[in-house]
Image 1 (cartoon, helix red, strand yellow):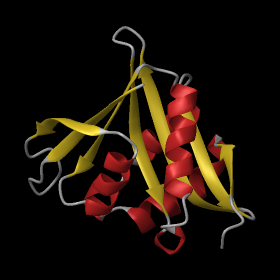
Image 2 (image 1 turned 90 degrees about the vertical axis):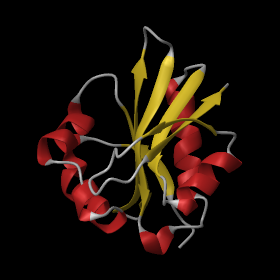
Image 3 (image 1 turned 180 degrees about the horizontal axis):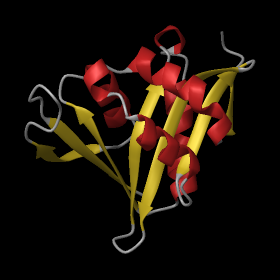
Length: 147
């Protein structure tokens, strides 16, 4: 299970990305069709996948706010059976590098302890809380890393 590599994602990866989303996130957090198409096709988006053979096992996307000099990691997911192998760390590091911004931010469900530990371990700190951000009323924690 450790023979994985990271590649740029294209629109041809839509089906696998949709499957990965369903495996990684609650139904109420899934991105709609047009959001997935946008993240796969819009210019300026950093989009990377981790693959084992031909199978996408992880995905990350980020975008730049050039005016404020902030990069945003908009999503990060790794198939449950491929977690704790360093894939999320590698995707996060690659996305940070490709965003190439002095500040990187991301948001996460307050209950997602695994993701919170990952981000804190990589130097991210909580800078804000978005009240009732998620469907069902759960707060989002906003993390920031200065490089």
